[in-house]
Image (cartoon, rainbow, N blue to C red; front, side, top):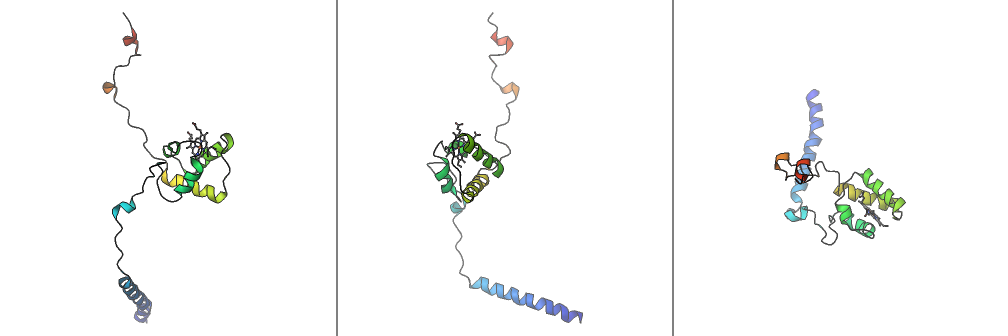
Length: 141
Ligand code: HEC
């Protein structure tokens, strides 16, 4: 009883697996995409990463200021939304359709998310140039 039950349970799986294998071999072998295609290209004009809704962002976000103000910035979706709300309140940025706005925010938060270390480490004091404003060096006598 037990064996036949197991067989009943396993047989369809085995059949499925066989079918899947056959299907897989029937499909024409896909050519491996060239390595460069995986890398995100940078738009030479704006500096935006050319992926997803980048053209929507280009269309809505560079009328008033350089795209660099955007590409140098990092933020979560919430932080990007806060920046947009601030511009709408203080800088005459227009209102977006809700769908447009969420696509813009998705592009920004996916491509310009917060990063751990954005500043270089501090230079050890003994490697710093002399400080001309330090007490001893400002003395003129
Ligand atoms: C109607 C004009 C206008 C448009 C369109 C606009 N902005 Fe701005 N934005 C401004 C102004 C003005 C500032 C302040 C510039 C400054 O500080 O020199 C600013 C500043 C910024 C900053 C810097 C914020 C900071 O804290 O330093 C970011 C990032 C930014 N905008 C992103 C965007 C994004 C993303 C869009 C598209 C959704 C956009 N902007 C569209 C007017 C605009």
